[in-house]
Structures are given as structure tokens and as C-alpha cells.
Length: 326
Ligand SMILES: Cc1cc2nc3c(=O)[nH]c(=O)nc-3n(C[C@H](O)[C@H](O)[C@H](O)COP(=O)(O)OP(=O)(O)OC[C@H]3O[C@@H](n4cnc5c(N)ncnc54)[C@H](O)[C@@H]3O)c2cc1C
Image (tube, rainbow, N blue to C red; front, side):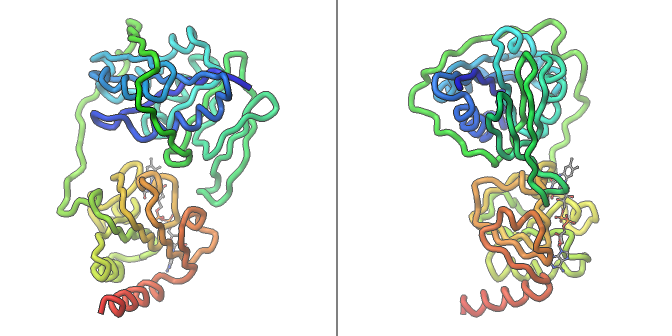
């Protein structure tokens, strides 16, 4: 089957977000031989990124406009809807990021297509699509069937769940400059942008991280993981509940509402593995999970899993590391 796929890609600061290439990988597989894959790129001053996208996408539609400077899902949905009506893709893909979560439902309603959110896998089946999605906090992976409307279908893909496509050397895709409709960008007005505190440690630069979660039970017990981190020459990171309880500062939080980290090794201690937490871990580190619940979702992605009480395992691990280091 050959179909036309439109990916709505995101930037991260002044560069393309990694998900732009993950969407391309998924879209190429779904478009099939003879199908086409296009990208819609939105923002203020994003024109320079179009050539980069043209190294992988067949068409790149660029909405470069000051009205798209701020993060505004509604504006993005309004901007892209006329492009969808004109190009008629059979499938629209975007990343299941904070921005994707913001604009995808509005866009799907505007263009009259069903939405499959937060897919871990997506394939053609019986003239429609079947998606794998995580339910019950990630403990169960369920298959959902979706019949497209006459206008097609839309899906958001979880960041990191799809293999990224390698862009080519030449920008052989076609770049098209788009103009915004008059009603775009007039709904929301950002009042203030609050950047997270830099903190005394930059966990985004650490090559080994010991991540601690709610399983640590009490602030006083943090010493157990801090001591392991010290033995390893690692930094301590954490899940959101640890920050919410005021045990560690926000600058240590990994996840979709925290920081994105790219360590070589990540040791998750008493962390269940929610998608909001795992969404902040990029670059496929060697993942060690220590959790007393054998059904914790983190074991589905861990390279090494230890099913036991962290208060037994972590001191024993630290002792072995100190012994090995002499
Ligand atoms: C909009 C939004 C944004 C969010 N952003 C983030 C984010 O950026 N980062 C983030 O982390 N979360 C985020 N969350 C929260 C997220 O949904 C989860 O609630 C959170 O990640 C769970 O943290 P946890 O794994 O530490 O706790 P839990 O899910 O409670 O897991 C604790 C784990 O510890 C284990 N455990 C308990 N005691 C022991 C023991 N003695 N030994 C071994 N294991 C033990 C348990 O089996 C359990 O698996 C966000 C949520 C929302 C709605």
C-alpha cells in the first residue's frame, strides 16, 4: 500500500528535535513503496531548518511567522489545517510531546480525522491502523484498531519509541514557503516564560546517573542513593514525586516536565518507569532498574533488572563497586 503521510515536526531551541527523524522513520515504513512523506515545520525564524528536513522528507512546508514564535498548540492546529485540506494526506503524524499533546486533538477535530494518541507502534491493518498503546500506567500494552474517516487518520508517536531514519547527504526534498491564515495566533498570549533553575549540578551533562523515585520513601533515605552515586562517580537525578515532596530540587528532575538527559548509564532506583519519566531519557543509555515490583513498567525497557528491595540492593551494589575500585 502506498500512501501520503504528513509529519508535523518540532524544533528544540534553534535545532530540529530528535523526534523529527523518528517521525520520518515511522512515516517511511507506513507510506510504503511509492508513497510520499512530507514535513510541516512551524515557528518564527525556522526557515534555516527546512534544508535539513529536505535531506529526509520528500516535501517540507514551512510556516515561518512571528505569530508562531510562542508555544501555542491552537495556533499550530489552525496553521496546519489548510495544508491538510489541500494536500490530503492519508495519515498525519506528530510526536507525543507537550506541544503534540497540545495541538493534535484540536487539529484532528478541525480536519475531521480520528486520533490515535501516544502510540508505541503503528501499522496498517484491514484498511485502517492498529496501534500499540500503554495503559494502566504502562503495566499493559494494548492493541487499538482505528478506522480512518474519509479524510484519513492521525496519530501521535511516543518520543523514543520509533527508530529514527538517517537523513541523506543531499537536501533533495522540495521546500515550500507557506503563508498563515489571518486567524492564526490570536487565541492565546503568553504572559511569561519561566526557565527552570540551573541548579548546582547540570544532570544533562552527566555520563552516569542514579535516578531515585518515590520508592525511596523518605528524604532521610536519600543518603543511600547519594552514597551509591558517589562510589560510581555519578550524579543523582530523580522522578517528579521526589521533587514535589521537596526532597530534591527541580534541577534534578528527569522527564517531560523536567530535564532531558543523555547519560551512558542510568540506574533507576525505586522508579516505576512512567512515560513522563522515561520521556526525559534520550540516547538509549544502559538502563539498570532496581524495583521490588516485578511488574513495574521500567523492567520492560531495562537492560538489567533487579527485583528486590532497594534498601538491600543499593548498599550491596555500592560495596561491590567500592571493592572493585579498590
Ligand atoms: C503532565 C505530567 C507531567 C509529568 N512529568 C513528569 C516528569 O517530568 N518526570 C517524572 O518522573 N514524572 C512526571 N510525571 C509523573 C509521572 O506520571 C509519575 O507519576 C512519576 O514518574 C512516578 O514517579 P516514581 O516512578 O518515582 O513513583 P511511582 O510510580 O510511585 O513508583 C515507585 C516505584 O518504587 C517501587 N518501590 C517502592 N518501594 C520500593 C523498595 N523498597 N525497593 C524497590 N522498589 C520500591 C515501586 O514498586 C514503584 O514501582 C508527570 C505527570 C504528569 C501528569
